[in-house]
Image (cartoon, rainbow over all chains, first blue to last red; front, top):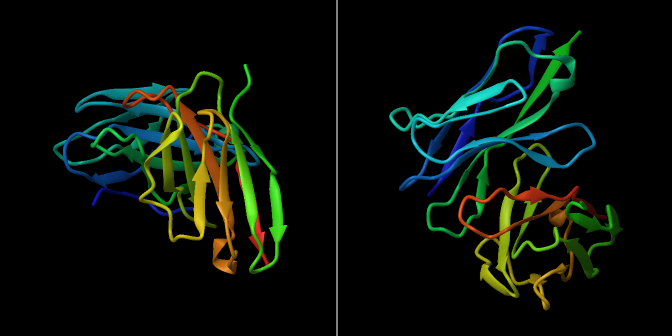
Length: 113
Length: 114
């Protein structure tokens, strides 16, 4: 079945460091791919998404490119801030048009000042 | 505008009791989803409504779990004979309902079964 695997955390970086959180997926067909973020004490928020191969999603300085050949959707940011500390979830939507989202286990990110 | 709201925010109950969790979706959203998030895990799909009907309930773990959406807006997730393993954060999300539309999540209800 469809699944998402993302790097385990926690990931600890200093402010202004470069961030990569790896995500790979297994799916039939052509799923849409997402990164969701959960800030401390808040609900899940969509960070970015890509709906077809080679699409790049971007938001708040974060980027991820839908790579069908490597079945990956790695999250990157060039210069992280303390306010980026959160849990990040890679996810995909089912391809049979029922819209349910399958999430990875999440990666906790700590940014040190 | 108002986002997805869920009540209660926290619920503590005893093993064997019945609980109801409520979700108010964003106005105009026809699709509504329930997910369950256990500690240290990503959310897991439970059930999906399109309008009043459950379009996919394949994620419900067993027949103790049931959800309704009688008027196509508010939804209630009902858990009978609660077990300690039901303890988790229950998340609700809504969307306009078209394929790949963004799902907007509520803050969740943290259920603790003692």
